[in-house]
Length: 261
Image 1: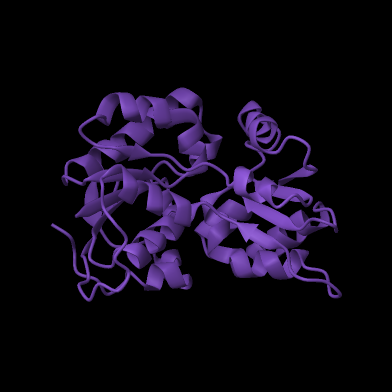
Image 2 (image 1 turned 90 degrees about the horizontal axis):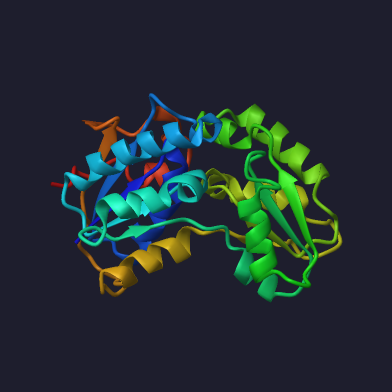
């Protein structure tokens, strides 16, 4: 079994690690666009063009499924990706975990990129899945970029700035950008109250990985002793994980694995 994941940068690491936990034996193909990242600043037309190129590079390796490990690409390019690749290659998008967060009933905060915060896309998700639940939309200026470059000072500053905008009574924080899952512990520490339980953080990586397996009729086998290979594509050419990826446990998990073929 082979699973491909795509993103402009290392935000796909969270979903990659989730796939690895569910199916250690799966071969992985990680397709990145370092020459074009970040995608969030691009026009929709340009983003779709770059996303298609990254997806087609991954598809050439014959995966059973392709995970779009990026919220922005899912919003703008998922329809085009599915039109180009399905039904031969199932394409799984990444959607913020607003529905399970709202099911808890408590006040919810959605941390997202400034481009996504307040967008029609996010407002529609809130309307459809969080009706009646207090929701605060929190723009996280510079956080995705700081995580991408593993700039520890910039990460701390961006997390602190977003925490100031987060209501003190929230019980759940939705991580509306895949990069944020790589620094979940720092986010939890920043928004937690000294005299109360820490808020629940809701990312998308686990659900996306599980959905990919369901789409191809595969079951989780977390106890598998086999270890699948990993191929990294940088603008369509085989390479290695960008150095900042190794600052995170999810990146180090993949460092010593042989290429998938």
